[in-house]
Length: 67
Image 1 (cartoon, rainbow, N blue to C red):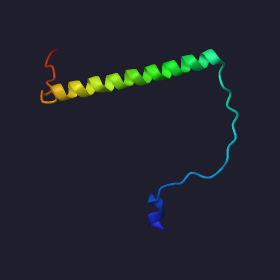
Image 2: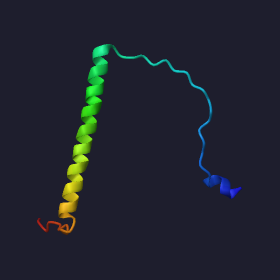
Image 3: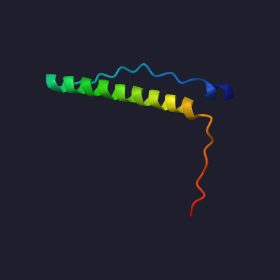
Image 4: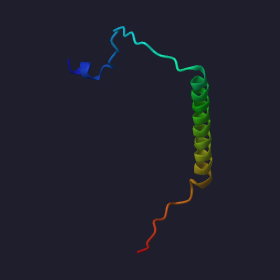
């Protein structure tokens, strides 16, 4: 029985019905634009981080010995 602790858990097959209300038209457009913009910002930030990481990976971090 100890092996059972490490087996992956499977989701139950319980059916849940939930009413999803669609926002009015203009709100959908704004939501889609915001979603696309946030994905673009995240992608650009990750590319910038990766570029800087490759560029400066060989420079050691030096802590300040100030007061």
